[in-house]
Each structure stands twice: as C-alpha cells, then as structure tokens.
Length: 131
Image 1 (cartoon, one colour):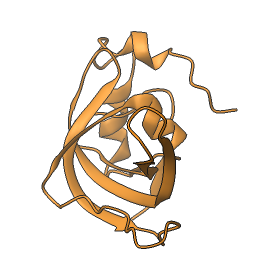
Image 2 (cartoon, one colour):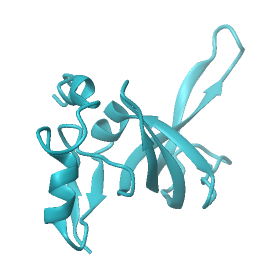
Image 3 (cartoon, one colour):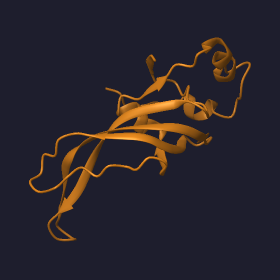
C-alpha cells in the first residue's frame, strides 16, 4: 500500500483518502467563548461522491486520535461506517493522501481532463492556500 499526496482535484469515487484534522471545542460563554484545540485526528474514508462545487463525501473507514491537549477532555473519534462530508480544500490543508490503485493506468483515464469527466474542472483549478 502506497499513499500519494492529493493535489489538483484528482479525487474520484472509489478512492481511499486520509487526512489530518483538528478537533476543537468552545470554552467559556456562548458570546465570549474561545475555540480551543483539543487534539488532532487522522481520518480515512472511502469516497462515494465528489460534487462539482468542491465537496467530497463518503464513509469513514477508520479514525485514529492523538493525545488530548486539554485536561479531562478526549478527542472525539469518528465511528467506522459514519457518513462524512468535507471540502476539497480541507483535505489539502490536512496533508491529504490517497491510496494508490492496483492499476494506476486505468485510474489515470478517469482523472484525465481530456478522457475522463469534465465536471470537476472548475474546482480543480481552484487556488488552495497551501502556503
């Protein structure tokens, strides 16, 4: 199993994708409370649908949680089989990776702008703030 970095909108249904994302809670009053980072979690999902406006939805395969940074609080773990929907740019920010297919040449035809689907061109060209 080899993981490849996700870039330029090359996510398609059937891909296995993983990324790292923070788990935040709000502390204090409703009006003046601050968001506090509890910890990080690495989520792996199977992509079911990729929308034209940059949303990736699928099903959680696994979720690994890190050490909590907040006393008496644990990082909430996502359950396997739970539906999840994330913006494509969230996957980029979270150092997103996808699992290579056994036959990458057949996948390349699907991802190709010229041979595969053209509906994702708009958000494939979207600028991401990777800086």
